[in-house]
Image 1 (cartoon, helix red, strand yellow):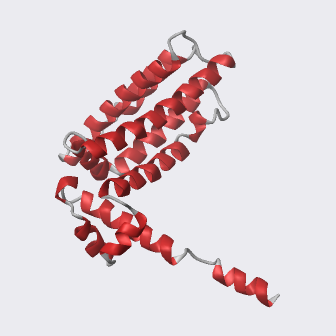
Image 2 (tube, rainbow, N blue to C red; image 1 turned 180 degrees about the horizontal axis):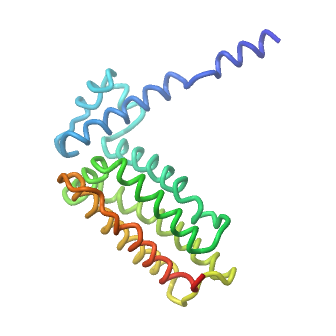
Image 3 (cartoon, rainbow, N blue to C red; image 1 turned 90 degrees about the vertical axis):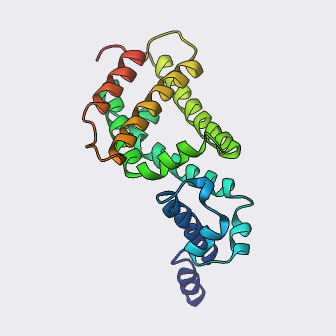
Length: 210
């Protein structure tokens, strides 16, 4: 009984290492809302996190690796947001597409400053460009897998290569949402035409009429 209680107390909260890693990522995320990635040094991240430089290198070999960790977290959030579509949940194809895209757009908008900062940095930072491309490839494969599953189930139509089709759909979607984010950051109201436009693009491309 006593040992069980001790284990419960020990496991009741996040480990110190997890807290430090999270603090470093939170600091990087905060700094990305204030300046370009190229102007952020590791010492800036550690100062903002209240940790030593050695602490940073314990978790991340480079600044790019920390960015990759941020993107990995965001990728996980995106898959959770669009789980209705990715996992083929209940409802019609149209309903699943609407739910997935609505949640995805909301998530991008809630992380707008960070995502625009990362997109800007991919043009000048080869390491980040490679990380961003790998991040995109992960999503492309996930979408391609869903297309194949829906075709096999008789839900999706078309004969185009699933990977190429997923590349085209995601490329158009990311560009569209990026323009929306830049407009919002420039002081404009969020567009109410983005969601229906993307829903129509995905649904008409992939599915038979509901």
